[in-house]
Length: 120
Image (cartoon, rainbow, N blue to C red; front, side, top):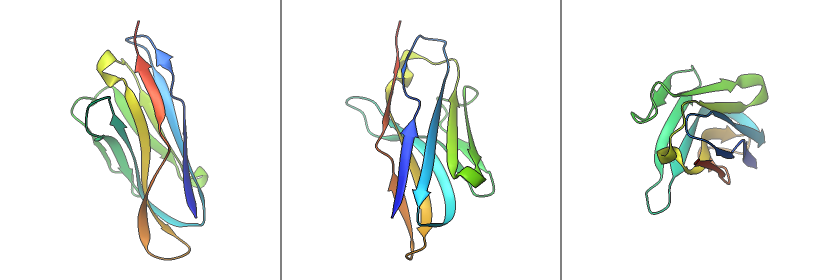
């Protein structure tokens, strides 16, 4: 089994910063990509940022220049550094990973979500 555990969500004032972490653990053979999605109340889940095994990154237009995704391969952990936060960044942030476990074919895994609230 593979698990993703997120941490780092919090209440922060507009203009502030947060760093989210997502640690993958379990029977991991290879991690192809990791990413962050978010879902605000009444809205669909959307891609925020992703990073591939060769460190190619992709960002939503709304976060370009403010958010940075990175990863620590030995720790199987991805990070999302969020700067210049805005109230519209308020959402539950979910970690997502495309992982091949030792058991078989690659699958998409999700974390449980971490709440980010940007408010004064």
